[in-house]
Image (cartoon, rainbow, N blue to C red; front, side, top):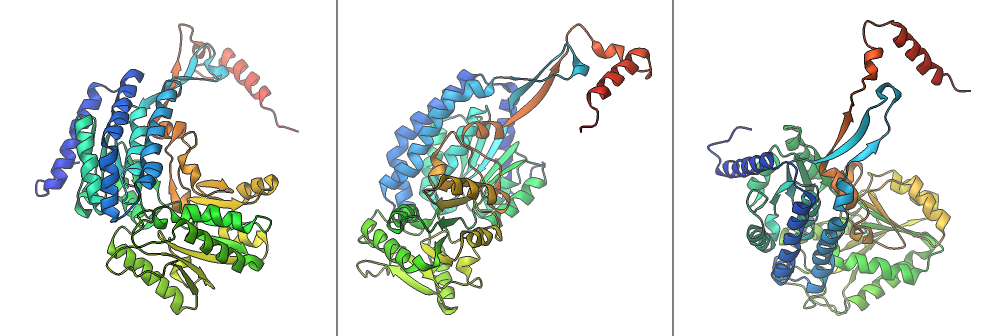
Length: 481
């Protein structure tokens, strides 16, 4: 892509990409030892900068518990590094494949090769984990990387930039901060792969930009992830499990339960138990650092507008505010439970991404399944039922990026499983072996030895060997039955 001399942002980004491309060309096949050494450097950097990263996230949110950042961002990155280091040698090993009769005497295999330079666009809600987790996969596969942090997590972006610059050369990994103008130019770059985590709306824009360069993309989007409670599941227990997940980051999580489907006869029992559990977890809110604030005033106003839209259209809104506190002058927003919701309300149309919980009653489990399947495929689905057979049935008849049965959100923390969406909630995977494959080119290879069997069946067609070979082959593949 030619440089735009009038746009200094584009110049810097293109020059950085060119430098990483040149470095990759000089060393296109980093050894397992080199990849492990880079992962070790990242591990040590995260340990060294942990306290500064945690403080930066707290500042960006104007209040987020250090325990929450450590649990949901720092530890998963360290777990991912350890898991990838343990398995990279096995993943990168060439795999033998079946050789067809026509290539008798040859060897066939798949060779896993780094793609080159990976671009990573990071959202604001988990600005550490969602930047470094894809980086772990990219480095494990032998790539170099450029990271664009979110302007809404400015403090975290600055610490990440300092950390990466102290840990890697500019030809290995770089971090780029700045606003929408930087993000726009970043997604225009002809990366060998681009990872974007964010909203479905912006994901479409990113994919269009990547298409100009035929850049393959991994999109981690979101959507409306449902939780379905079977009639047999204990209400108090499910309230505890969902309340824990929904309270994390005040619902500002791509896999947060977006709406809850409850048997109609148990609607009131659930909302009462849910509100009680939330009040126990967060007895106060305003000055309680265990409860995260909303990232920006604009996002808070969006959520308040959605609540008002629901009220105006007939919803019943229950604010879980145990001490009756005022939040004036803060970005805190209590969890609100919305019942009597209808399809014309924004809380059932848009991803909520905050502390609002619509509760939708159903009469039969098939009705609940049909409700979910009639909507865009979500990033996650949560089903609560002790019955194993019904759980397996739910896996087969619904589509989502991932599933938890009798829990919420924890599937993201499993490094030995792929994480990714489907359809409107995304495409591609990272984490684990699937992440390694996502950032690698699986290159099919045929190695022919001294003996050349095709010399007996080559042109001119119709020779005796060719005729005998084809007759033998088609005798193998007669009609079945």
